[in-house]
Every structure is written in structure tokens, then in C-alpha cells.
Length: 300
Image 1 (cartoon, rainbow, N blue to C red):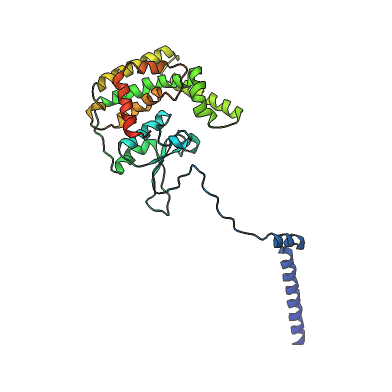
Image 2: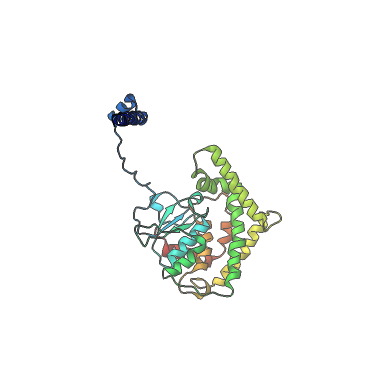
């Protein structure tokens, strides 16, 4: 019995020694422990949101290419794709705020996109890309527009003839590129000269590739001539009406055309070669259509 007790005491002593060794193995050395004693761990409060982040989370926010100047917060975007949807939301009375952004921040890799106000404060809403904005507007009570048989053909004039001339006008005309595209899309994206040069090359290459999809060669005179024919056809279609297709309120087609006419006629954009502006200025009713929409839906 005594031997068993002694053996038990010895085993207990060995176990305690092992535990002590194990405990000392994982404990901090005294020198390091003294550092932590002098500088205890603390919980640091969260950083403030960036200034451009929306402060009021119960609002719809449309992310677009836009000036960072707070005085131009409600101004029309200088990008046709963004301006089309900016105008479309306004035409349907959808309340929203705009935020300046870039394609890298967009979920689909291209602006614009909308971040709807969350229905549940504890769950963030999912972004709505441009391809789903018409459906989203209708889901919010927006008017579902009637389809006109001729509308598809006239939309093609905007999306192909006018857009092709615009791509050359802004990106491939070197004078206009340096005067307008460079400050809007290149200089604003980075302060690094190598990055700027790389981005400029990418923009011009993308425009050239897009034009070559429908043209064997890029002939600026031909592109401008096609745009002039498109503007002439659209002018005839509008006639003396305030909005296209006899509508009493502007719709998707009006927004699609405004996306180009506003930017082409914008005096704050100093195009050094104003060829496309001169073409458009031949059609008074298209100019009045643009002015009417800007006055009616864009403050300032």
C-alpha cells in the first residue's frame, strides 16, 4: 500500500512538473511581457466613412461618371451611358442621389449602377446594373412605356450612327482627346504619369476596336456624315412635339438621345474640333428638346 502511494505521489509530481514545463513554454518571456504591460491592447474605434460615401443610407444612390465638385452634384453626367440612366430615373420620378465613381468600382465593371435604399436596415441592398434598371424602375411604380414599332429602328440610329461618331469625336480626334477625354477620364483617375499614359492608350484602343467591328476602315468624314443623317431623321421624327412618339412625358427614347445631345452641346466641355457640335446645331428642334429636358429635370 505504501509503495503504491509513493508511486502515485511520484507520478503526480512528474505530471505537475510536465504541466509546469508546458505552461512555461507557452508563457511570454519577461521582457516581452513587460512591453505589453506598458502598452496594453485596446479596441480602436472604426474609421469615419469616406467623404463621398452616402451618409443617409435610406436613399437610392446612382454611381456615375461625374465631377467631384459638390456644386455640380445634380449636374448631368459627362458620360453618355451614365447620363441616359440618370435622366431616365428623373423622368420617372425616382428619388436618388448621385455619387462620382469609376468602372473599377462597378460590380459589372462598367458604370452606371444603382444601390437601392435597403428595405431592411440590417441587410444591405444588392446593386442594380444598367441592364436591369428599366425593370427595377417599373418595380418601384415607374410607368411602363408602350412600345412603338418604329422605335427600335430609331434607337439603332442613336446606338450605332451617333455613338460611332461620338467615339471618334471624343477618343480618336487627338485635339478633342487632349482637351476633353484626358481631364475627364485620365487625369482624374491617377496622378501617376505612367498610369495615365497606359489608361489613355487603353481608352483609345478600345474605341478603335469598337469602331472596327462595324467598319473596315475608320473614316471620320463618313462617321460624321452618318451621324448627320441620323440627326436629320430624328429631327423629322420629333417635328413640333415636345417629346418623341407623341408622348406627354419624356421616356427611354428621350433619355437615350439626351445622353449625346447634352454632352455634344455642353459649353463647359471645350472641344477643340467641334465638328459634331456643328452637325447637331443644324436642327433647332433637337436643341430645344435638349434644353427643355435639362431645364425641366436638372437643377442649376
